[in-house]
Image (cartoon, rainbow, N blue to C red; front, side, top):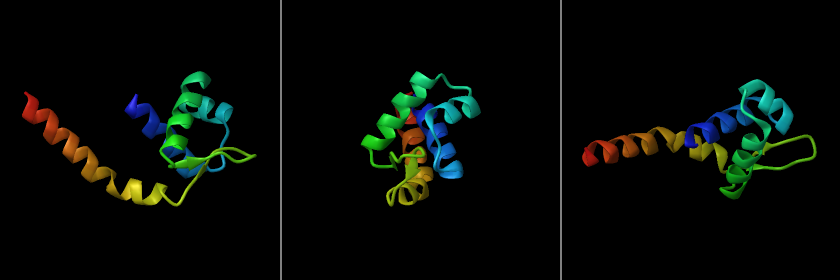
Length: 82
């Protein structure tokens, strides 16, 4: 699910504003799952809804800049669980 949210976020960043149907078409993810991912991303304040479609917020770039570190932390936690 996290992977799907990140795919949706990537498409919003690259194509904003972008609507649900276009996201579903470009990502080959069903529209109901796109809608759910958009809701989660909006809840996290990484995107915002607008009339023409989803757009990024002031929180998007800082999140993307920290994403590598967050992933490294997750990998480290998974490895410690093995």
